[in-house]
Image (tube, rainbow, N blue to C red; front, side):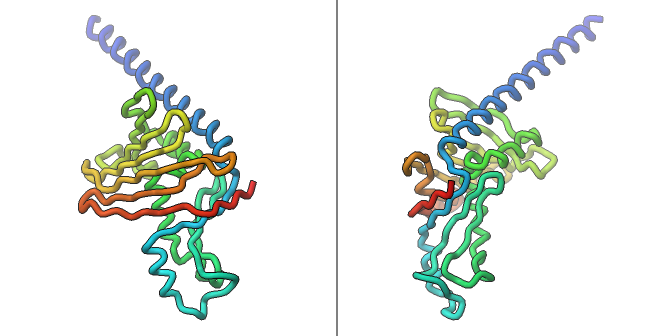
Length: 219
């Protein structure tokens, strides 16, 4: 009988812990959604400057160029859809040549708060928890929502509790850090938007920087 009572107490305690964690995550999500409505327009376009992009654009064959001005890499963002990276001023069939770099936005975590449905997918799959919380920053640990197990491949997202944006993300592979994204933001008119991402390879300490220039807000 004592063993049964002890088991019941443990189960109740565990259920309260899980409920508390779920409640905290839901509160964080509500704050992110609320902030996103104010800080991020429904859609925008912004130019991305990066040394690798600039070098690659110079190598584009002239026969695929069109439109006014030189080719440039831009991000197109829409809430509930996320981001696309395209090249402007070239023929339509070549505009998505740099689409593989859309993964960089997923690494940075920027789109997970600008487009909260991405974060909602992780929450609904039970692949996220509060790792630690301070007065100004809260750290979330998240796993790939498409995978069954919470294994040694995960990410830490550092959330600014004032603005509810992700200032830093660190990705782990087999329990070891391998990519870090540091995101900088500032106000553009009434919106609070990223202006720089620095991606660092933790293995060789090399980094790549992306600058956001000339926002066009479509709301």
